[in-house]
Every structure is written in structure tokens, then in C-alpha cells.
Length: 246
Image (cartoon, rainbow, N blue to C red; front, top):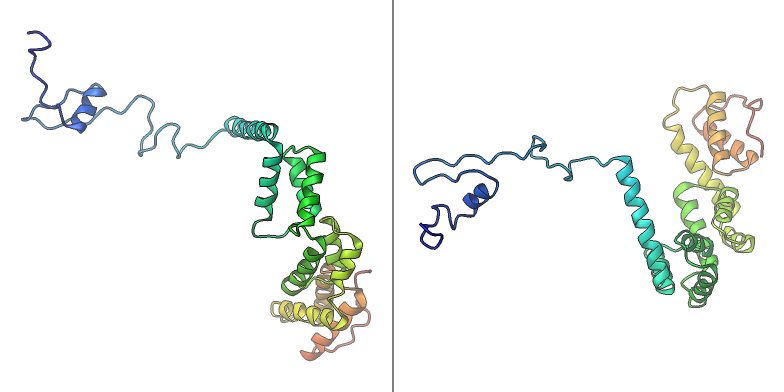
């Protein structure tokens, strides 16, 4: 019988049976049940396929992927550096203000030429998208309110972000002595909740250390801690407690 005359198999038109035939299984006749397709050699049990999402990539594969991403990014910068640099700046500024230094570091890390980066940063500054003074004011207000940081600690953070001393001083001027004392007392009161039963001298050292890490001067730290403990009735003589040096 020629190929033109050979009748079509019974499974023609059935996708499932066609797949069985494709993987080497003999499709069933209408009178016999379908046999499960053989699992390919080397496949894993539990429904996971080799190379699928369930497989953990090796270090070599992760490193190769990282290098490929870096090479692709470098090629993109080389093809149209200005467009890439603009996109980097806009993406980085989306949802959060950044200092000029932070943005410059970002561009340098992505391989944007220094001259182009400087020109774009100047332009973004001119139109108000970069404003270190405004950033500093917002940073000081937020970190002092949410973390209770004192001006000394805030100044160090701003310096690490590239804010000038003049802009930092202007921003820190928002915090007066009353603000510092209130923030320090709030930190102490919160910490005291987990220090019930400690000896006053032990509590004083720990609380003063907490305030020191937040940037408060020893004199203010000791005064606030002493006041808080006195309000709790722990007003024993604490004059011999050693405080962190300024």
C-alpha cells in the first residue's frame, strides 16, 4: 500500500495522542487505554524539569549572568551614553530625592564618562531635580523624627552623602535644644520598657550608651536619663556612673 493509500492512524487529530507518538509511544487503539509517556532520561521526579525554575543555579552560572548583564550595560552606554545617563538619573530620582554625589557615584558605576556625567548633573541641578540643600532639610527632619538622631549623627550622615557643611548647617538649624531633649527622652522612655528590674547604675550606663550612639552629647544624655529614672522612682545617687566621652 502506498503512502497515499495508507489509512491515517486512529490518533490523528488528538493532540494528546499525537504527543505520545512524537515521544516514541505507540498511541492506543480505541479499545485499549492510553499508556503514560516515558519520562525523558535524566529528568527529575516531582514535576521539576532539569534547568527549570526549581533548579538552583551554580556560582559559575550566576557569575556568567552577572558578566553578561555588565557587558550589555556597557554596550548600551557606548551606543548612546547620554540617553543611558539620563535614564539612570531619572530612574534613581523616581520616588526619592538624591544628592548630587550619590547620583555621580551611580553614573560612574555604570561607566558614564565623567564629562558627560558632570554636564547632566549640572543640568538636573539647574532645573531643580537635584537640590542638596532641600535634600538635607528633608533628611534631617525625617531622621530626627523617625530615628531620634541628634545633630552630630545627622551631620555625619549628610557628609557621607556629599552634602556641604553649609547646607548641612542650615538643615540642622531646624533642631533646637528643646527638640533634642524631647527626642532623647522619647528614646529613653521607649527603651525603659524592656529594662524593668535593672539596677539604676546599669540602666543608666545602657541608656546613656544608647543616646551616645544616636549622637547626643554626654551632658544632655546623663540629664535626660537621670530625669527619666527619677520619674520612675529610681533616684539613687548616680553621680559615679561613667558616661561615654563626647
